[in-house]
Image: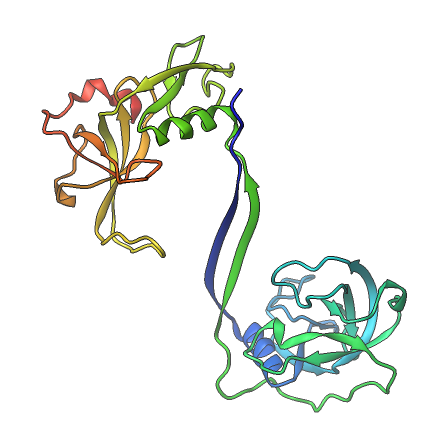
Length: 313
């Protein structure tokens, strides 16, 4: 059996999030070395603050400054920090109840080793040298044996408040396409498209998944399909994607390759975007050294009759 492919894969989606008045004040406060909580109707002070009481669901906006010192309520040792974590050397994740707060804040504690951490130990905020209005303005916590910090009684009103943040969501992992898709990818490198036929319903699936999605039985019989096909459905893309050097507008379509019983997607080129239509007959266009078609273009054949592809919509 040929070796199954695998490769590192990164899925990343940074998005801009707007802030309400409470979160805006909290993050702006961090920028100014002020830690703010919010007082609930029953008098508790929540840090980090929320905009609605977790018990009554009532809106709360009574901002309260708390001290930059506090007590560790629980902790876990991180012996191998990962990319993007607060510290590059081993550290403890801690929940810290700041003086004046009734809830705990999660952050990193910079300490030599796990033997130096304990529940109940006193700590204080270590501020980042450069602060922008984010939780990372607290660089970490550090052990502290002095008196409790004294809040200045800040009201939570700031000039130039932070109104939005960019939250970066990222997942790094190793992806393996499995046996069936490995064969499919290897065939593409030879400019061939190969699917697999279900032994029960006899449908040919491209790209193959190793099992029939309808019958639930394993597939292994390889069938070469295409290279030509029919546009079944399509959409016009008007927003330019990051790191994709294609001018908008352009068309992405589902294409039923000849001999396949499942449409795959591909970009349509060689024709004005407003002339692409259902039933259009297309063929792949390859670029030198590519492992998959760059796009599909019209073949010049008459459009396919709707009845020939309606089951593949």
